[in-house]
Image (cartoon, rainbow, N blue to C red):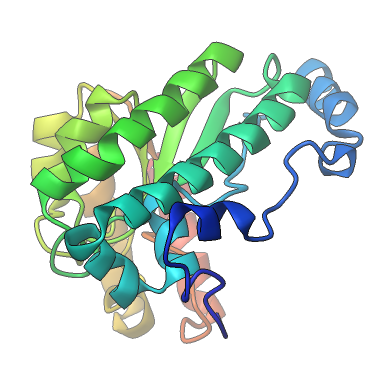
Length: 263
């Protein structure tokens, strides 16, 4: 980000008058229905409607600036809610356009909204429940009205304190399970939430483990991870996030070969 489009906004009118995307632009969905139908009828792939818009919280932080928006929640909640509502409106419009074309064919609908830092949620659980949870509820209720797909949510960081709320609003698949963050121990997560959530992630840590561990250590870590998360189902093996340039190819090969061996 090189600038924050709503950095100088002072009122709901300023938010409304900003230049916003057009969810109904037909170019967004051109050809999608035909491709989704082909994949559904001719392949055994899992069809995922991938993350295509920022969630209400992350979107507000991006547009306003993190420092300013987090301050707004305390000092100017009227403005903060105006921004959240507008982002939610755009999100619903985008999903409406997308699922109107492919809702019957997708198996999973993926939405992102990063709520966590390395140490905790960005905001208190109380504030999440006041400002963000109701908007997550509206968003996922809308998605459910347009498709029978499972609801996947991507949220980085330490989000343990919000997981029961995410389950309540309809999240069925959680990603990426950043296990190096506070409170994100995979054994605890499996024990506490494994009956309600699929863990699409929880794989090898890409911050400390994958760049530095030996191949034998990576192999042991993969086996350990699968032993914890795989029993009973509800686990999709991937690394804990995007694999960065500091990870050599032999480590990536070891990661996935070991997963294939022990699946």
